[in-house]
Image 1 (cartoon, helix red, strand yellow):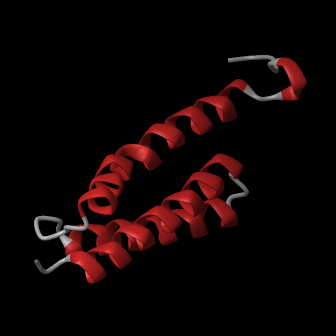
Image 2: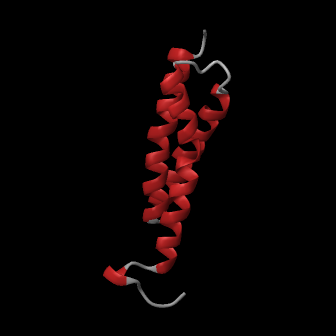
Length: 94
């Protein structure tokens, strides 16, 4: 892809931003369900801890390689995964 989009946005970076949006918010429905039902009994704590660790590492990679979309979306994912982990710890037992 050659050329920049309006406002100087690189098309490849835009692709990364859109992909990061979907990847990051894939677990948002789970977080909302826990929030609404106040139950996280069937949620895997280890899955979200691993996802958090992966996002921290990907964020470090994005920082080291100066990849804004990777850094941004993993920063958002870290917040989301930490929220789910906190909700799991709070509402994990019924």
